[in-house]
Amino acid sequence: MALLLRLSDLIEAFLGAVARLFAWAFIACIVVIVFDVITRKFGFQLPGLGSTRLQELEWQIHTLLFTTWLGFAYLKNAHVRIDVFVAGLSTRKKVWLELIGCIVFALPYLYVALPHAQDFFVTSFLQNESSDAPTGLPYRWIVKFFLYAGLWGVLLAVLSVMARCIVVLFGPPELARRAPLPVASSH
Image (tube, rainbow, N blue to C red; front, side):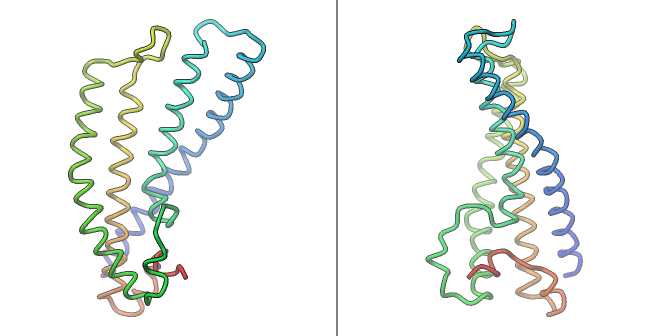
C-alpha cells in the first residue's frame, strides 16, 4: 500500500511540474492575443506574422495549455463533476464511486482515445502537416503531439487517483490518512 501511495505522489509531482512549466504559456498567449489585437486595430503587421498566423498561434497555445493541465486538473478536482449525485454520500462511498468511475469510464475511454490520438499525431508528423491556410503556420503535428501527450497525462492522473482510492479503501488507517482525495474532501 505504501508503494501505491508513493507511486501516486510521484505521478502528482510529475504532472504538477509539467503544469507549472507550461503555465508560462499563459504569458505567451496573452502577448500573442494583445499583439494580434493591436496589429488589427492599427492596421500594421510584421512580415511573416499576419493575422492568420497569429490567430492560429492563439488556438495552438490554448491547446498546449489545456492539454498540459488536463491530468493535473483531475488530480486537483478542478474538472467538471456533478456533485448533486454524491452530496449526501459518506466519504467512503464517494471514494468507491470514484474508483468505479475510473474503472468503468476513464480507463475504457483512454483505451480507445490514446491509439487514435497517436495515429492522429503520427500521421500529421509523417505528412509534415501544416495549416490549410496559405499564410498559416507550419508543423501542425506539434499541437497534435500535445493532444496525445495530454491524454497520457490524464491516464497517469487516473492511475494516481485509483492508487489513492485503493489505499483509502483497503490500506491501513495511517496510510489512508496520507492519501487525501479531493473527491473525499468535498461537501
